[in-house]
Length: 163
Image 1 (cartoon, rainbow, N blue to C red):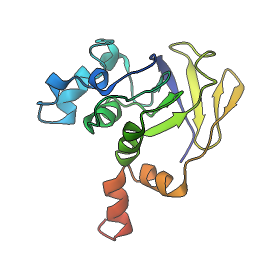
Image 2: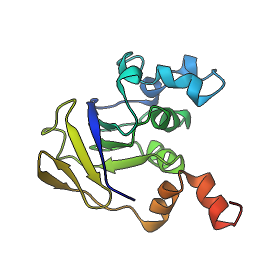
Image 3: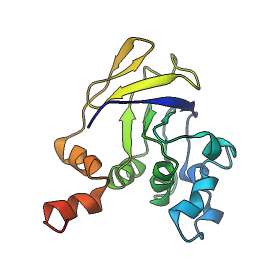
């Protein structure tokens, strides 16, 4: 997975799936219809500010709450290239990988970064902020394959010769 740079949006701890995409918007027909309501209870303006390639940096327990797949799908639809948090709810973590959204656990960057900063992500290596490097772990090869293909369905289609 190639390196990328994006503008950072800062969120706090315990960002649950009801904040990512509130229940009342789950009845909309498509993820694209839901996109304008991403993070609505917390920051209604956020969907209009995020541009393709931007990055969310958060605290502990990102993605807690219900296991709705629409949460990572909405984040991806907003154009977010990755979410960096101190920790993730486990089911959200796997739902995100399965939907092709890169998540990075790191607890060093949150105290150094401010909203609007540009951050370079070198997946499996480090995060670079203002010339300073912060090491990050790498994902297992099978999860990287899923991310590279844009999600589990595409990865399985490729593996099975369907695409």
